[in-house]
Length: 242
Image 1 (cartoon, rainbow, N blue to C red):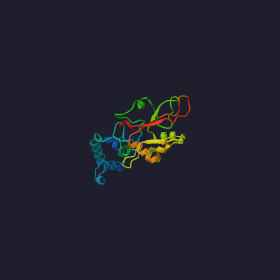
Image 2 (cartoon, rainbow, N blue to C red):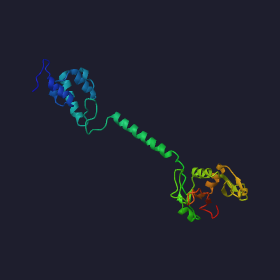
Image 3 (cartoon, helix red, strand yellow):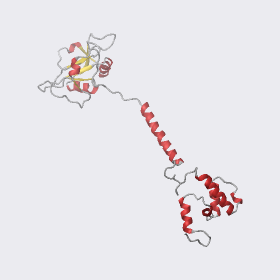
Image 4 (cartoon, rainbow, N blue to C red):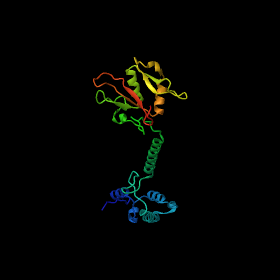
């Protein structure tokens, strides 16, 4: 049993009881100082404690702790909830803030416009067998599987790179225009004997018409013997004539 000091309080026992949680025994509470008892009564919402003497204070605190102990969780020295208890108000607030921030990011991501993607090929009721049998090229990083391979693409960068490598200019065939719209799309290649029938246009006009008509470009990079190939043709999956 703990030794009592000159003030009548057990030093070791008192320290253990003060750090171990709530006290419900009147004999244990009697070892507390008057100001400690009053502070704990006020924490329980008991008023008028300044007029009570220590025996009355002890009885009031014992009653208050028995009444409130069953419905209140105990807390550790630093104010954190004991294991199994609910989170403290700051923890709940932090969790709520984090959850709301995550929801806000998800909503902004959902509202953000999706980046447009350009399909490798376009299909329709008039799609040719050449499209299905050709290797799809989706970016300038894609390479033909072998020399002489038939290729198909709708990628603007790929088309422009192919044309520039051959000195070809975007063009349309004269006499095929309708209502002021660009006619049949083609390229004006150096040395092409029919160049007099072509009218060069801008890349912007060429690609705008290419996309509006949902065309594919079927072409070759090389002949079977490895030499550069100038073969190309535009194909419409919706019409028999491109």
